[in-house]
Image (cartoon, rainbow, N blue to C red):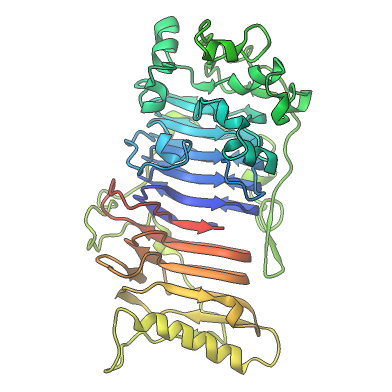
Length: 503
C-alpha cells in the first residue's frame, strides 16, 4: 500500500489485517481514529508515512480473533506521527481492545503483538504519549475469561498470546509529548494511569510500557496459557530515543506481583526513568527487511526502493522542531461536495496508461442507471477480457475521468475470471477519477474484491463510502498505490469505515 491518502475514517485510515508480507509506505493518514493499523499480521515494513491529527497515529494490534492469524514481525520506521490528538469518535466494539479504546494523543501503540521494531521515527505533539506498549490484560482485566474455553481461553488454545514480546524502540526523535493526557482507558478509576503517573512523578512518560503481562509471566502466573518467563530475545527495550522519558505501569520483574495488585493488594509502581536509558535498557537483534511480491515483482526496501531511508542504517536525523505540515490552506474537505484539492500533492503524479489497456466508458445508456452502470461496465469488461484470453492474461481496466455518483458496490469475484492471471483497475488520477458514494442507500463498501491473485488498484478516489472504501479478501498479491479515500465530514461515525481492508 503506497502513495495514498485517507481522511476522516471512524476506524483505521489504512488497515492491513490477517495478512503476511506487507509494505505500507508513503501514505498520508489524517483525522482518522487510527491513522495506520497493522492487525494480526506478519512480516510488515511500515515506513515513510505521515500520520497527523488522528486519535492514534500508528497501531500494531494483535487481537483474539481466533483464525490462526497472529502478529509477528513488524518494522515501523521513518514515519512522522504528529499531533494525533483528535477525540476518539469510533463506534463501540464487542472487542474490548478495538480502536475505540485508543486514547487521544497517541503517537504509536503496540498491543499484544510480538517482534516489533520502532526506529527512526519523528513523533511529536501527541498529548498522551509518544509510544505505548501494552498487554491485552490492560484492555480486558477479567482474568476468568482467559481460562474459559468459550471465551479468550479458546483463542489462546488456537495460538493467540496476550503478552507483547520482543519490542525494540530505539533511535526515535520524540518531542512535546504528554502535555494533556486523556482518554477513558487512561482515566479508568480501577486503574488510574494518568493520576498515578502525574500524581507521583508530575508527568506522563513519553514511552509507556504497562509491564503487566511481563510481570505475570515472570511470576509464572501465566504458565497455563503458555506464557512463560521472558527469554533474552523477548525483552521490551527502549534506548537512544533522545532522552525521552520511559515509564512502566507495573514493575516488569518479579519484584512485585501484578496479579495480587490487580486484586486490590498493593499498587502499581508508576515508575518513570527521566533519563530514558535505564528502565528498559536492553538490546535486541534488528528485524530483517520485509518485502511483498505482486505479479512476480518484488517490492520493498533494497528491492525497488534503494533510497537513503532503506539503505542507511541510521538516517540523518530530522529535527522535530523544523518539521512543517506542507498542506495548502484549503486542503481539508469539510463538506462532502467540496471540489478543493485535498490530496496532499498526490494529484501531481503523472498517470501512464499501459498499451493494450481497456478504456472504460461510464456514459450511461438511455435504458441504464447512472448509479449502477459503471459497475456493470467493469464487470462486462472483465468478462470480455476473460473470454478473449487464450493464455493467462493481465487485464488492465482504465476508468474514465469524472466524478461518478454511485449506489452499488464494485463487487468483483475474481474466481469468475479464470483466464486472467492479473487484474489492474485504475483511473486517470487520484483527483480525476472520483467514485462518490455520498447519499448511497444500497452500497456499503466501495470496492469488494475477492478470490483472486495479482490485483492492482491505482489512481482514483473513493468518496464517502458507507463502510470500507476498498475491501479485498482471499486474494494473493495486492498492490494499491495513488488511491484516495475520503470521508469529508471529519468525526462522522460511520461504523467500521476503513480506507483499505485486506483480509
